[in-house]
Length: 412
Image (cartoon, rainbow, N blue to C red; front, side):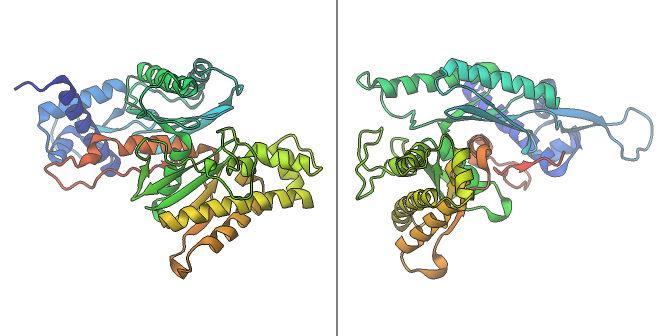
């Protein structure tokens, strides 16, 4: 019986995942050893490995084990450490960050390039492609066999909301997302996963460290805008319509400033980059950038410290309410604003702790984000790995551990 083309492609991809998984775990192997361990026929395995070799995902080396008799030494297949197999892309307001992982799930390259905040989607994609090309040349990498691309999209985004011509802003963002997915899919001939970049950063914070993986995590990013993400059971929660995590638009009692969303008193009107700089200026300390804000905070300027404490208290009130409802084991505060000074994170943690139920040792750990600017792009790769068909429970004739969805930095 001939399988439908879509099913055949899925089966082939799953076999490829299994071959790569075994090579990751056990190192170089002959085709015979691979066949025995995976349980595929020699013919099927030969087809799969020939395709992987052609795409540069794996490479061949001579078998150095002692041999008896004549004949050519058996070829051993191994992962190619210079093959960029997974791309994580985070499109921010003013820059795009690219991270590259090889088939061994090692991060082998990371870089970013700036663009103007008013740049079109086409200009942003061109900037990303030029950066990838430059990374290939500078790091001697190749992208012939990319297995997946995870893209972080800026701002509120969901592919599941019906089209509505009456909402031109949402439609423009949807068109940008479709354009972006199509461009990367055509460029790399690989599956493209697209989600909100802040949610992806939360996923990365939860799953990056093998020793401290967190199954239930609440993430908040303080930047030009404010957003967040919720990880439950190690998986990213997107919500019924795909808009989960828009914590920046939770209203605060006692604040009446108009937010860009149309409501008044949102967290974003108090703790975003623009809001903090505006409040400093109104109090008599005009600052032009986050760098100047960090410098003033480092010198202990009392007005700046007061503004940061107010922002931290607002953040803590929102996080406290969310933590009471969601019961995370860890709360992470990220974004450029969180890097400015310890004051805002410390105040947020103190206020959050006050808002929580008195459950002692069961209270969530509250910390600053560890991955910085790379978080969204790393989360994109992790989301791609979690969406692999192999992770749906593909079984083989041997007892091989499931593929890990975590990444690690290459030692090279």
